[in-house]
Length: 388
Image (cartoon, rainbow, N blue to C red):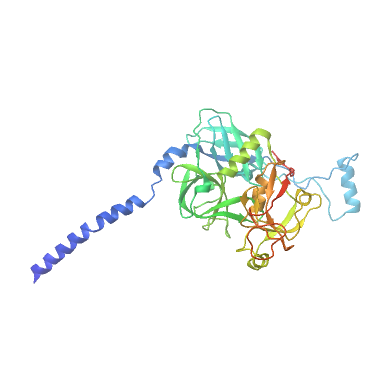
């Protein structure tokens, strides 16, 4: 009996040892390996530290033609509860962020909020070299800034196509969270085209890559070692990472940096409408097969939309050949269109007529749906530009 048990145990051990080998090898092959990516691209990521000089808070109001003592006396007499006077200057403030080299001659991309208000910008490379940097331009609406150091022969990143990113794909972030330089974290793409409050011009890439203060401005890589985004924001109730990170698509960032380098500012188109989301009930009432487009609530008088015949209750379906799937798509598409450009805007309206437009089997809108019906031409003027 003991011999039988020994033989059986030996057979089971041999079977278990042989069976998992292919499966284990396959599992190992499927696990991502980031070592080559980090070796190839890590040197192009930099640490950015900024300094803001001390400034006095609560400075005495300046009144033309009056000396400071006269102003103080005025306040003492007429506003006794608010007696301004010399106050201690605020301490020197410092901040940390990340960035990455986009050209060998020293141009670096980062977030605008990393260098906002900075009096001095220091860039530290992985080889411990440090350079002073100057701001070439910054755009607060997209949170993109271009800075430059006086150096040549620098390693630069390669760019990928964020439109080809797939949800569930592995991505890697390299940055300086809390000042820990060249920290590598990894995760997957959680969603694409995310809209955030007060952020109308950026279709964010959402990931679960660990991002913390200091990572801002650092690159987001795909597994081919190409930059597909700039890590910009996190959603958190604690101030630290909670699994929700947002990156600016690199195609958006490159368009902004090109304008900043060429003109020092960013110009955006506008059409002058107030819009809202199309709900399922609204889609049904308009005869749409599903909720899509941007519903026009009101039209600014004299705006390009007004001059082109766009009216309240119109639903803008496409803009310049690009589909408007949700209301958040329209500001991005319009903003990315250069001022002075003529575009076609097919829309659908609540003003019904008996004329058949397209292939609808019922009384159709006066202005049509999609590309099957006449489009409204619009020429875009510039909006107020954000200067560097």
